[in-house]
Image (cartoon, rainbow, N blue to C red; front, side):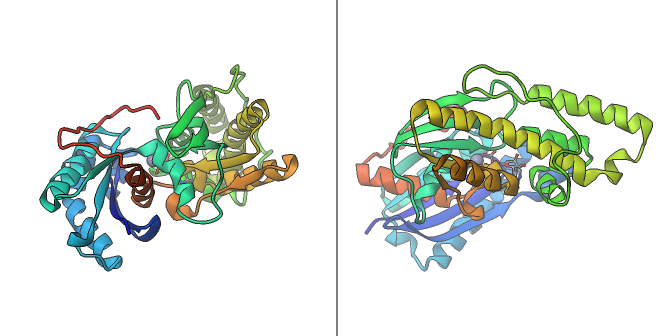
Length: 333
Ligand code: KG4
Ligand code: ZN
């Protein structure tokens, strides 16, 4: 019976989780509110906050799962990609803890883990499937052939989808991270109130920088005519922008599924918490008779449950790393 401790510290969430035989028994997350007033994650502050949170978070995860540290069989940690200082805290902690307990250490790729979050609970996809991985730092269409055999077949050439949400929110004077707030305002807005252009990027790649510029100019012109434009039309603006971001994502995902003859679609990463994306991918599946997999909210944004699950499958393969392992700020899947 494999008992794995998962540790996540790639960005601004410090998280620890326990998996027993591939099932999650605890998943504790400490959010860092320190970044809110800066409108984005400040790497130096993130590392310091991880340093403060990591031991209490691990204690909590062990306690909630009713597991003693001596019961652990392995420690899985996010090795990358992410902020180097943040990754160093999780990596160093995992190494020291594994050394003290004399148990194996498992390195996990954060982007693979977002996808493997689909194996936490039923229904699980079968291989091969396509996963649209959309977070604050990544936007990828991944052809998932096996647990650790993944091919990126499309990705953003500039901003990530999460950045498109967060940068738009900043233009609307909403606090960081703006994605969830845009989602909230959009619920009562009209998606056709304003029209924003869809970029013409060949193949399966994405681009969001043009959209950001068109939103900037649109708002500048509207505010010139009516200084209260944003406050008066927040819901319609959010609904229209969200509609465009989601339609850009799903048009490419549909193309990828047709080109690859894949009939199972999944979404992963922080932006997969977006209610309109969840609704629209479901509609896309129904239209084409494809099966759609949507993670539970708590497994969309950064969490250690996905690290523990990825660790579980690596544990089964006997894929361990030594004490000379270091973090990788960039690490393709
Ligand atoms: O995966 P994640 O937690 O961290 C990274 O690895 O980047 O993703 C964070 C991103 C942020 O850009 C945040 O605004 C976005 O996910 N996000 C959302 C929603 N919830 C989180 N974007 C749109 N709608 C949401 N409901
Ligand atoms: Zn993430």
